View (cartoon, rainbow, N blue to C red):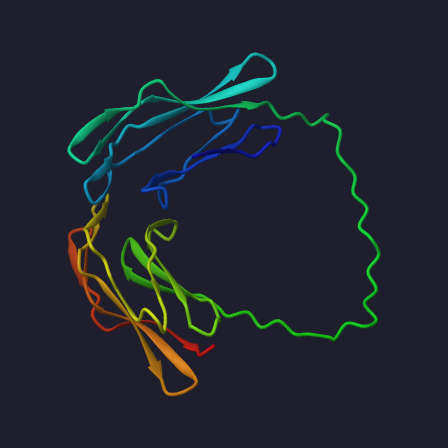
Length: 228
């Protein structure tokens, strides 16, 4: 997916995704940085984005630009797909001289409004190996839905399961590998009530191979949260 920002540098954010939902590589190109290349293989299940995939920004006349994959391959379901020449989009060039639209907000009468306080529920970031971590975010709803993001180097989500009162357990179905880091099939996350006012989210089993070491995750507490 290619998303232009519309700024004067024509910055364009790219997201290479697995099954249309898991971001695996999120580079950006622009007038200032016209080329970006994937430095390592990324593998999820039977899909591998091969090292060397290259994305190129190119001006197309004075009013447009293109974003194109100039080289690279993906191995998917035992097939090899060559990406060279694949156009990801043709976009208008941004201009600082473009006329800015003006919007005047209507006046709001606040005299009848009750003063309210918003209490944010914090996410918990738990390191699990040298190159991996888990961010756990409660929704605060009555089902205690809790979103997890298993990440590579704190920036690339590789597995994004959800647990809740209705679905208290979730298990990773396939190995996921990025570089020398492998999230092993079988990692299991468990939701459990802790009395009547709190609940826990815990990794009950699983392993990560990272940088030549094997890290056992069993018993790793990902957070204690208030029941919605």
